[in-house]
Amino acid sequence: MATSAESQDNVAEYTVSELSGALKRTVEDAYGYVRVRGEISGYRGPHSSGHCYFALKDDKAKIDAIIWRGVFGKLRFRPEEGMEVVASGKLTTYPGRSSYQIVIESLEPAGAGALMALLEERKRKLAAEGLFGEDRKRPLPFLPAVIGVVTSPTGAVIRDILHRLADRFPRHVLVWPVRVQGETSAREVAAAIAGFNAISPGGPVPRPDLLIVARGGGSIEELWSFNEEEVVRAAAASAIPLISAVGHETDWTLLDLVADCRAPTPTAAAEMAVPVRLELIAATDDLARRARAGSLRYLGERRAALRSAARALPRLTELLALPRQRFDIAAGLLGRALIANTTGHRTRLDRVSGRLAPALAANAHAVRVRFARCAARLAPAVHRARIRHEGARIADLAARAARALSQQIARRHDRLEARAGLLASLSYENVLRRGYALVRDAKGAMLKRAAAVAPGAKIELEFADGRLKATADGPAAPASPSGAQSAPATGKAKPAGQGSLF
Image 1 (cartoon, helix red, strand yellow):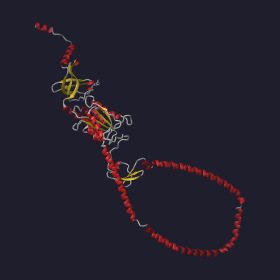
Image 2 (cartoon, helix red, strand yellow):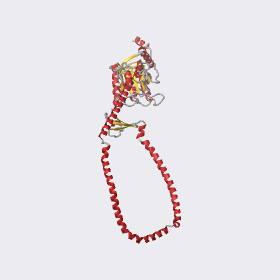
Image 3 (cartoon, helix red, strand yellow):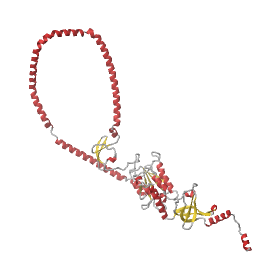
């Protein structure tokens, strides 16, 4: 018993802090860097400090875990409750609670199955928000003047896109260089999409009419950047139509679901972006040839109809034969009718003059008396002053009337010119002379909306110099924006002003 007591007295004493420090050094020396597989438990997101505190567990044990703020910002994906992961880091202890914990430096899902489960969960979440709805997708511009490409500037993808665009229809291309895999890839791709949308129209850098986000094929881990929420939300918020060309035909990402159009390969994205220039020229020539043939055929039909109508009209001699005959008969009767009319009037005059002779003799004296009285009243001396007064008054009124008339004519002339100018500015014919056309249906009624025209309907186009008949083929694709740069005539030439990246 004495020996046992002496041996216990010889054991070194430690304070709690010394023992905790010794255990900490022992654990860190023995397990300096470890990889631990387990299920995330108790994850509530980053703390207010930016650090993350949770636990890793399996069916028998549990260990506390920490992700410092600087490491959390570099993770390829965000931890989620219940996710099975493989954590790599340093094992250490926390003396304040006498517990051990792992300080995580990298985190990855436990195998492709876990990544697919995470991908499906994220897909369901974003679909519930309506980001993948078909009603949100917009049609691609028919012939974009400027195309923005988000991809790596050193890979084969950008070469394939540029070569395909040069073969089909050379366009001005803006490349936003990004990393297409790695820790910062998702952030760079999202920033590139937002950056293209932030370009002001008409500025020193042209704003793209179409965006292409492109990357070559790879595994699900290599394509994971294009499954991140920040990339999906940036594509959904883009005001510029976007084509997703990530991976090969069998690969798919969440960016494919939110994009306005998904291309199986980057080369196919270039083919979707622009039509073939030679095919457009051939189609335009064919339409022009058909329009000329239709015009000639229409004029021929109208000319034949006019000739047929002219043959059905009676000759001029036939139209004038009956009136000419009636005129000749009337001319023959006119001489005898004048003689008979004159004789009748002479007879009536003789009868009336015989009855008026006595009355004229009786009234002659009275007429002379009345004439003398009137002559006295109308003597020049009596009315000369009045005539002068009235003459002056009439002259004044005439001058005033002339001034008033000239003023009235000037005012009416000004009003007429103003209304003539207003009429000219409001006249639809003035609008037609500026290059517009007026569309009418087969009944002559004016058409104001494209929705009112059914495919195959006959319509009439009125231009400033005449009218044309036409047939509606159906809704047309949106026209390219004004100010589009003209393309070179050769198929292999680069667009004007486009420098080489290589």
